[in-house]
Amino acid sequence: MDDLIKRAAADLSAAARSVALTGAGISVESGIPPFRGKGGLWEKIDPMEFAHIDAFLADPEKVWTVLIREMKEIIDRAAPNAAHRGLARLAELGRLNTVITQNVDGLHQAAGNTDVIEFHGTFARQRCLDCGTGCDTAEIDMSVIPPRCHCGGIYRPDCVFFGEMIPPGHLARSREISANCDVMLVIGTSATVQPAAMMPYIARSAGATVIEINPEPTPLTGDISDYILTGPAGEVMDRLVTAVEAAG
Ligand code: NAD
Ligand code: ZN
Image 1 (cartoon, rainbow, N blue to C red):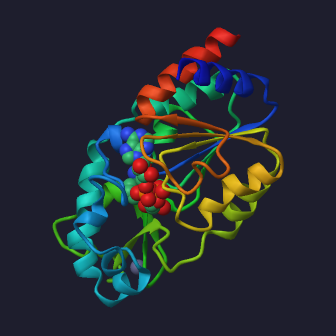
Image 2 (image 1 turned 45 degrees about the vertical axis):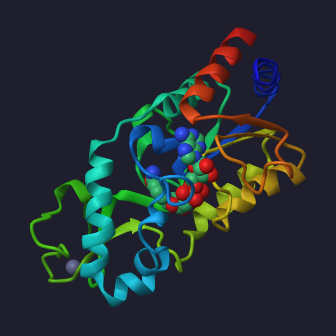
């Protein structure tokens, strides 16, 4: 693995433009469970029952009680881990331009990355289903579930539920960045949720090198990934960043 990391670091150092695509796996070491894979939330609850927009609109109280309230508690306690910090360090070194994240936990920004595309929105904000007024999730009164806006409407997180469209600006910019990078780091994503999972294919078909970091194989592994760095994101990123620093 040492040699693999050295070569991946050399490619990253030589790249004029590089981008990271991250998924729930990068936040596992921060204590946030992923949806799929070992220990994933999907082992406990049915996604379509709780994370689909139709399910939310049909019974907001249920989805707030089972999914959103718990997510808030988990995200409130979470802090960036070595993998988030590693991406911030790469940006600081001028070796990473943009992070495209499927996560809604805000940990990339907390680690110090400034160019972050929140592909599936953010959990940090809420908006009223009736009047559209927004507010910070931190300000929400959680003593009444579902929480309500002053107009009486129910709040929803500013995240993209299953069954909803990706904000068109985020999708367009992600495609453009993916098509114009030399290296794409793909970290902690099962690469199954579309259209985010398309980005590594866009990058690869435009000639980019794909570096995948994940303890488990994904549909990209053995297909388009040039480097498969097997292991938890924090540990692998530490080694990769050290190798990039050594490469100068
Ligand atoms: P996913 O849940 O489908 O897949 C998680 C991936 O992470 C798996 O491939 C798994 O092998 C890998 N993984 C597990 N532990 C890891 C570790 N320590 N280091 C690196 N990788 C690890 O996640 P997804 O692909 O992001 O797609 C699911 C959707 O769920 C996303 O759209 C996201 O919006 C949402 N989600 C977000 C959060 C969050 O904000 N932290 C958490 C759960 C789900
Ligand atoms: Zn309102």
